[in-house]
Length: 196
Image (cartoon, rainbow, N blue to C red; front, side, top):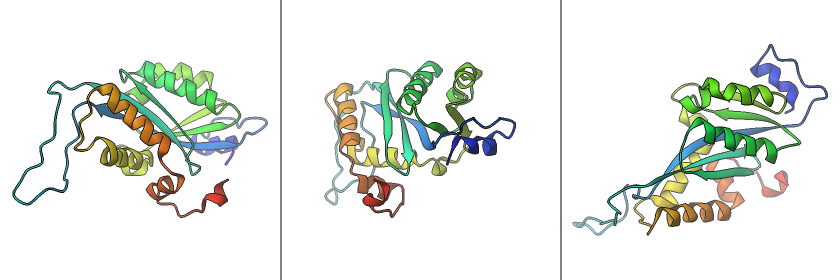
């Protein structure tokens, strides 16, 4: 894939000269709550599992993008989830992939479709192209599989002593996620050597 493929997404755009190698990045945000995510779990028949809770919830927002299919990624935690945080994340993404063109696959959230992002995308039109998924189609955004596994492994039915501890647990989980586990989550059966 190259930057010339931008003509498929935006037929009116003139392909870059010279063309650049391109990456496909799936982006989304997920909430990190201090209160545990609740869900089914194993318990003794006739008893109910009790999970500690702080009572008053605190929330942080994890923004992430995964490069398909190499498993590279950029993850950042923010105190709020507004357009300015999305733009800050995108600026970091453009800096991280300074030598490649980015096709950014994401949903139609208000913070993604707002005209407030137009100046950013205009400024970096030779570096990044947003590609919007159909409305109400989270199954098409591969990063949703990562978020689902994160909840199952880290925050479901588990209480942390602080929101900071919960965020640190998520960061550690992301840092230690094996390539083979990532490929399994993405439903890919590619040998690690084939990607390297």
